[in-house]
Every structure is written in C-alpha cells, then in structure tokens.
Length: 229
Image 1: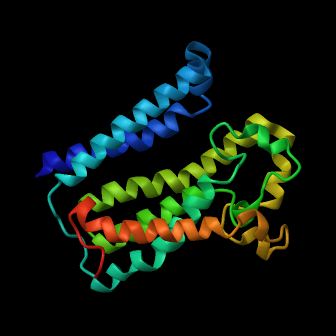
Image 2 (image 1 turned 60 degrees about the vertical axis):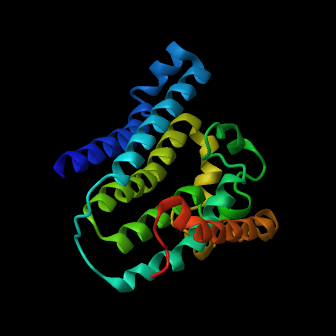
Image 3 (image 1 turned 180 degrees about the vertical axis):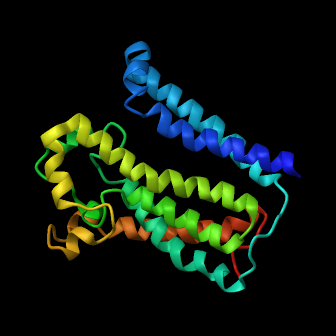
C-alpha cells in the first residue's frame, strides 16, 4: 500500500517541482541558451506530460485511505466546477501577458481585456477551484496528494508568473499589475478597473458551461465514478 502512495507522491513532486524548477530564473535562461526557445518549450512540455501521466496512473492505482468523511462536501464540485470551467475556457481563449509566450502583449493598448479584468490568472484559478473541490469532496490520502499538487501548482504558479513577468518586463508590466489583480474581483472592487463585458463575450461563459455539462455527463465513463452525491 505504501509503495503505491509513495509512487504517487514522487510523481506529484516531479510534476509540480518540474514546473517551478524548469521555469525558474536560476535554470530557465541557461536551458534556453543551450536548447533555444523551441527546444526549451519542448523539454518543458515533455517533462510535464510524462510526470502528469505517471501521476495520473499512480493516482488511479493508489489505495483508498480515508482522512475525513463529509457527505455534504460532495456537493462542492457541483457548485464550484461550473465557475472553474468558465474561468478555464475564458482564460485559454483570451490573449494575455501572463500566458506562455504572451510577454509582448503587455505593451499593447489594452493588456487586460475580458476575463483578465476579473483576475489576471483565470485559467489557474479554474484549476485551483477544480482541485480544491475534488480534494474536499474525496477526503482521502491519494486525493490529497493528487489534487493538492494541482492546488499548490496553480496558486503558487500565479505568484511565480507575476515575479517572472515583473523581472523580465520591468516598467512594461506596470499597467497590467496596476489595473488587474490576482484575487478575483479585487481590482474591480477597488476601482482600479471596470468589467469589460464585450471583451469577455457571451460565447466564453456558454462554452465553459457546455464543457462542464459534458464532463459531468462523461465522468462515469472517463473516471469510473459518478460525480453526483
């Protein structure tokens, strides 16, 4: 039993640590100089894909060791995942200076359209909500390692990206930093920006909800477990 859990923990450390280590200021410039930008992104993607596959396999084969039993928390994914899906879809379909290769967008007239007015890290917030909801609803050791890894990566990744952008972009990062926020709705609440409904569009929230309903329907087939309490 411990060997399966140890394998899951090792895979999670590789997945999470690999993201932070390879993109760190201490290592990334050296790898880019040696491999080129394309080679570096290939290495980064390969490490992420292999470690995620190992992590997923280890989680699927890990034993069930319950930490808490709270049936009421099984409703949490049904509440949070529609929001997570909208954030993820909107984040992936909006050009952003915080996205991979998006540094040049920081100098454009409006560096924060649409969903970026709510938070400059919408996709990572979507992942964080997904991970937190599943961790709380499952309440076992394997889920703590698996979904906890995604939670650490998404929340830590926001600070990591901001630090890198501020370091590499300098003053060009100022407009993005001053008019957006990491915490959802903080920039709007403090009147540093206003909501850009046109930039968000109607189709992004709709596509996010369609994705949520599709995953809800396919969950038993894909993951051999019903998402309903």
